[in-house]
Length: 73
Image (tube, rainbow, N blue to C red; front, side, top):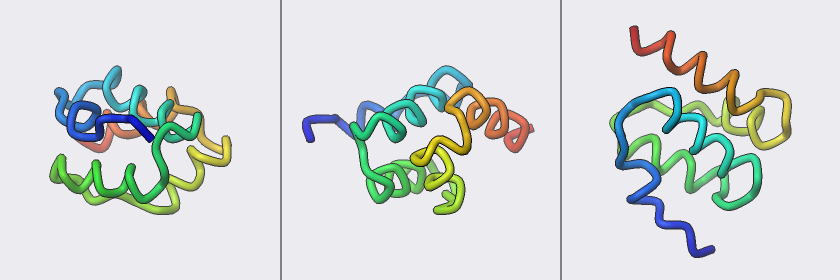
């Protein structure tokens, strides 16, 4: 895949950026492993359960961005 992970995960910690990451995961542009690696590069502790929920459609990218914003407060 030609997705630049450094560019995708190097933005500000905003809801818009998190939603973009989740959309890329859901659409298949990045794999679960790439998502987990990118979140670790941001200093986050990624959850494989959350990544799988986004990938399968059980959690929408908007819901993920909202949840992630709450955790950072």
